[in-house]
Image 1 (cartoon, rainbow, N blue to C red):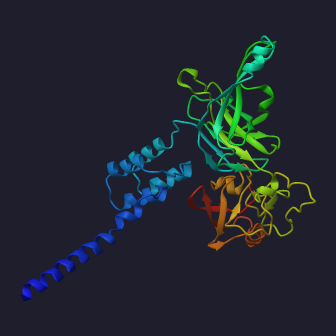
Image 2: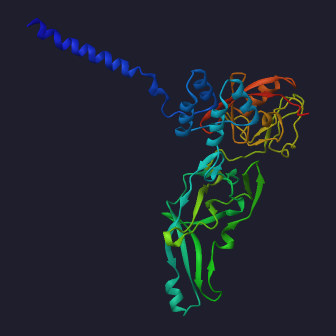
Image 3: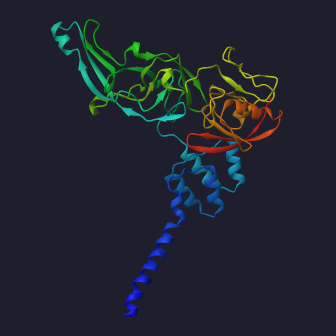
Length: 373
């Protein structure tokens, strides 16, 4: 009788032991994390075979930094050439990547909304045209920007920036529409987007096959970066593109309301005030060559950089426009004023550790405080 009473206790104890062992299994903590340079170096130092690391790279979400200095650092850390080559292969684009204010925009396929003007076409014996429209569901995009969004387009090999145009759509209560064809009427048939809906843009090469699309300040409304030649009527596709909504300044607190304030280290050079013209595109002594258009005293989770001067200290360290500076020498920062004051502490030529965020990943780099020459 005593044995029958003890048996359940032994079973329960064993079950609790196994449960505790499984709950402490560290393998589950790695699920859902991005694979970075640091993670690859860690796996190499743990002694994992190249084939295992490469498999992780091929099947994981990778956030690699692969500039020349990054490659040298990987080699010095003992990462094999085969693994480095796999990291480079993983960064080769197979489809366009569009970001607005550093936020990735998904591509959407447009369906046929309606054929408008058919009754008018019949009543006027063909004088009025029949208009074919495409649409996207929903009154607004999930991507919301101010009137001067930073649009960057990274293209795969063989694609050209000429295939991408900025178009304003017609906003409706439940959808966004775009006229893609006009048939009949006095002027005859027209294929493609109406000229008045296309916004004039400028293109700035960013290196490789990456470009920044610039435009005059956009009015409040619905927009799409339309892929020219994407309609396929046989498959029921009336176009593809990357949509976003431009809201009014009142609806977007992050919209710049003052001139660009340079992040400087030279105490003799004061930050630009709202009444002054924008700071000149030069890197003064003691500067990191980075600019932010945030309100100087507005507290945020780091300082979002609106501009990084080409070949300036920050640029040389791999920091880009759209990155958010979080800390300098482990001193966390929350306003532009704090960043200015922190940089002023260092003399030109000083090396400072900068922690910054790009998308959802955190990076650290060393910035040599100006001058650039």
